[in-house]
Length: 479
View 1 (cartoon, rainbow, N blue to C red):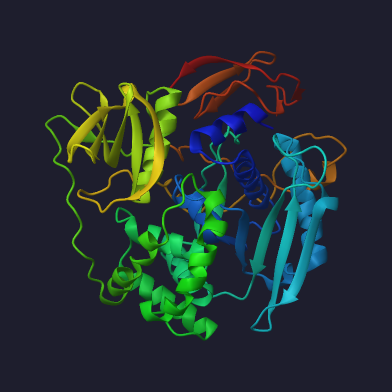
View 2 (spheres, rainbow, N blue to C red):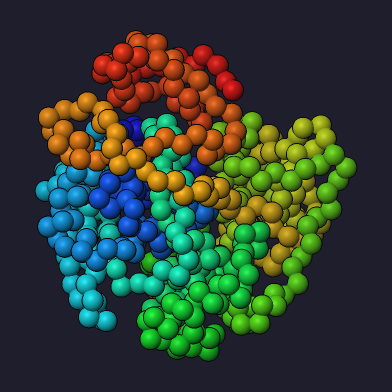
C-alpha cells in the first residue's frame, strides 16, 4: 500500500481533501479486484460518473461510488455478493495491503421502481490516511440488471496514478463512450442532480472526443423507451432549477478543486439540446495560430519533462480550462490572471502555455519551466480560441478473452482460498505509450518494467518461482 505522503502530496497538487484522493486510490484497487474475479468479470459493466473519471478523463471531478449494469440478474443475491466480495477483499489485501475485510461489507437487495431487483452495497476500507479509530471510510456500490445495454461494452485501462499500480495496469469492462454520454442525459432528465448536469455539460464541451449527436440521440431514445420515459428536452429541466441551486455546492464542492458557478453550466443546456436534436453545433472558436516549428502537446502531464511544481500547476490549469475558469498564474514573481488555452512545444523544445491575459487584454505565452504556481478562480470566461487543454483519455483496447485458469501467487492462509478462486487476468502489453523504467530487484535480480518511476516492489516470485522477500529495486535502464 502506498504511504500517507503520496496521498498528501497528490491532494496538495490537486487542491483536494486527502480523504477524497484516498478514496480514488481505493476505487482503483477495488475495480482491479472486481475485474480479476472470474465469476463476475465478464458480466459486470462499469458505468456512471466514476467510469467517466477512471476510463475517459483523468482531469475530472472525483467520484465516490461504483455503478454497474449486471448482465446476469442471478448475481443480485446478498449471499452471492458477500461471498464474491470477501474474495475480492482478500485479493486486494494481498496485492497492495489495502484492507477491505468481509465483516465490513454489506449488501442490500431491494425492488426498484420497475419491480425488479437492484442492490446497494457498501465496502469499507482502511487506507493510508484513514483514521485508526472510529468509523471506516466506505465505497458505495450501485448494482442493477434492469438496464438496456445498447452498444457493446469496451475493455479499457483505467487511470490509477499511484506508485503501487499493477505492473500491467488495470483493465475494466465499461460502457462505450456514447452509451455513457446517453446514460448521463437520461439520468439528468430523471433525477436532475448537480453531478449529472456537470457531467453532461463537460461531455458536450469536450469537442475533441464528442461523438455524433445522431448516435447519442439514438442510444438515448432506446434507453428512455426501455424506462418508459420521453426523450428529455431543455424545458423539461426548468422546474428543477431552484433545487439545483440549493444542492450544487453541497454535492460537488468536495469533488472539485474549485466549484464553478451553477449558471456557467445551466446556461449551456439550451445550446446542448439544440445540438442533440438537430446535430448542428454552434461555431467553435478556432485555435490560436500555430507558430512555425510549434506542436500542440496532447500527452499526459506526468510524461512531460518538467518539475513537480510545474506538473502540479499544469493539472490545475487543465482543470480550469475544461471548466472555463480563469487561473491566477504565479510567474516571474507576480500573479497574472489568465484564460488558459493551449500547451505547445516550440522549435527550441521549450514547453509554453498559450493564454489570454485579462489585465492586458491580449494574448500571452508563458514558459512552463518558469511557472511558480497556479490557482483556480471562480471567474468564468467565454473562450476566444479553441481550448486544447481538455482532459485526455486512455486508448480503448480490443476485447480479449480472459484466461479462466491461471496460477495464483502464493499467499498467506488469511486469503489462500479466496485467491485460488480468483483467476488473474492475462497480461497485456503495449497498452500505454511513453518511456518504460526498468528496475531490478536487489534481492533476486528479477526485472520489472514500469511506466512510472517507483522503486518499491510488491510481493513477487523470484526467477525460480519461489516467493521473494525483496521489496526494493534499483533502476537499471529505460526503454
